[in-house]
Length: 72
Image 1 (tube, rainbow, N blue to C red):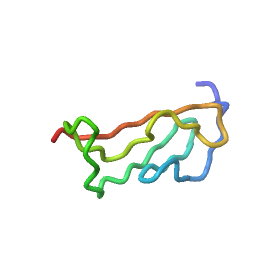
Image 2 (tube, rainbow, N blue to C red):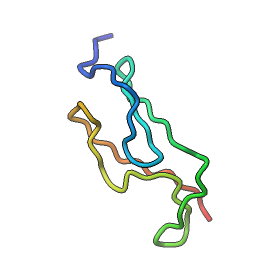
Image 3 (cartoon, one colour):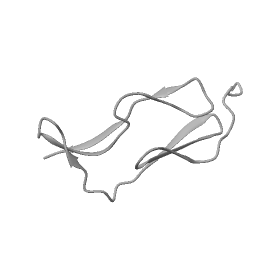
């Protein structure tokens, strides 16, 4: 297995409710599930966590887009 070009990082807040860190060449995400969420624009789901588009991962050239939701 080849070594990752991405160095390990400390856990950091990426957006409210989503933490991230690079460990051993893997991006590890922690998403807060205690929140009730907010109703989506369509009204069909509750959005638990979202990056609201793509965001940069600090210290890298990577971009991330996350949506965590549940149907209403």
